[in-house]
Each structure stands twice: as C-alpha cells, then as structure tokens.
Amino acid sequence: MFSGLGDRVEVQAGLDEITLTQHDPRIVRGMEGDERNTVLSIWIELWRGALSSFRQMKTAEVDIGDDQIRWVIRERVA
Image (cartoon, rainbow, N blue to C red; front, top):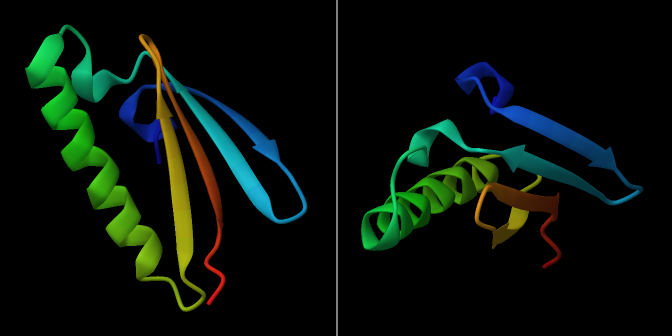
C-alpha cells in the first residue's frame, strides 16, 4: 500500500511479524513540527484501525524517524 503512494518501502518478514520501513513518507513530505506530528498521528491510527478489521486482528508498533516510519505488524494476542 505504501509503495502505491509513491513511497520507497523496505520489507523484512519474520516468522510472526513483518517490518515495513517507509522512507520519506509522501503524506508528510515538506511538513515540519506540530503539523507533521498531527498528520502522522492520524495516519498511524487509520492504519491501526485497518489492521483491526482483519479476521485475525493485527497490531502495529510504529517508530517515527526524521525521514522514515518503521511499522512492525503482528497478530494480536488475546
């Protein structure tokens, strides 16, 4: 999905998780400070909601860097 937005994405698949590193995310390109943080917070929550809609719900841990977002996605454990 992120590649479809024009972002460069690295994918690392593990046994029980997948890590996506989204480089220079287009959705916040050119933004700084509070504006960037607000857009990223909303963006992350939208994706977390999408992951919760799967039959087997998933979780996302997100690490925001200066020029990348790292998503670690795994199945939610009850």
